Image (tube, rainbow, N blue to C red):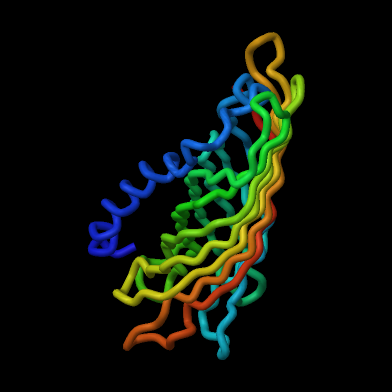
Length: 253
């Protein structure tokens, strides 16, 4: 993201990140006992199945289509979820070898439209989310110039639905939300849009021996990037769409 954009949005990101956890209305019921004693955070290793392809009208040269698996880490705690992925793709005959770096973060507050008893083992909520994302797909060994990489940062907002179901030694969490945001190219000064739909499900087991537990998770995302063009490139040169499946396994505490 251009430095000017970072400078302009940094205070906004900070204020929203601080304000979002406070969205839960004071009139909402107390947190159910089933969740108060559960794991507070989880760190997992992830396998990312990525399908990232050009979505413009006229296919340019070069393109940054990336369809190989990537590997990374995820970190989750109440109201926060972040992922980091890294992958390489060997080019076919005449194609470039590519490298992918992807970072995504969601932070959200909760609206609770339904009242449940204090000791209920289920709850539903409406997450109001701030999203920050960065994806770079670059030609390996190439110099840092305009045509050597797809490099786009996204800042967006969304709202959706979520739930938790808890019992002794097990808790299931899920959420789904659409997000729309601004998309910025790291080179150039154009600004466009990015839209995506994100869904995630995770299961916490344990803790075992009053220490660590086991977390399994699955996530799915559809996203479209349209950061715009400039006087040097066409308006759809960096238009891409993609899907992502995330399988993860880790520990909670």
